[in-house]
Image 1: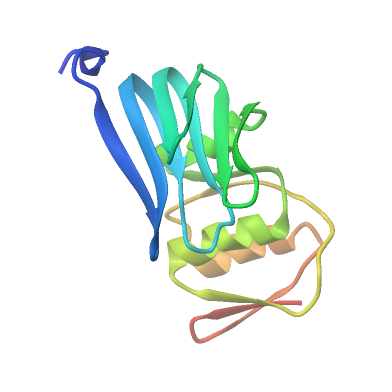
Image 2 (image 1 turned 90 degrees about the horizontal axis):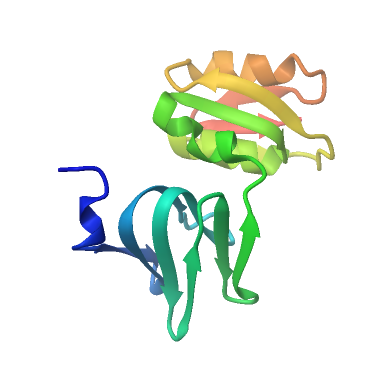
Length: 163
């Protein structure tokens, strides 16, 4: 279809978490990303170009390019400017891009991608900066993160243990 042709006929993406509705995104011709996983506290909708509207119940926001809506049960819908757009859309280019990312966030992404569980033996206060191709073996991805000197991983069956 022509770029922007869904401006005339928008489509709706229903966002769900197990056992609950997390809202819906109406798309009006655009490039966007939705992050909604059971292990994430928030649903994030990020707009790269075009137009989307995020709605949950009676609350609704229309995003402008470069904005992100964040929905949580406790805080409702919040809109902010995107500070890490490369990190949000890097998956479509076949990369994990981490730009000052919390270790828990990084490991949740790796956990979902490689279908493994993560166990933290201690809290890590540092941040990760890395570009890792998504076709990298898990052991190599973890070695790349270990090069920071901040963390060490042990792989046991389908579990990553963070030391």
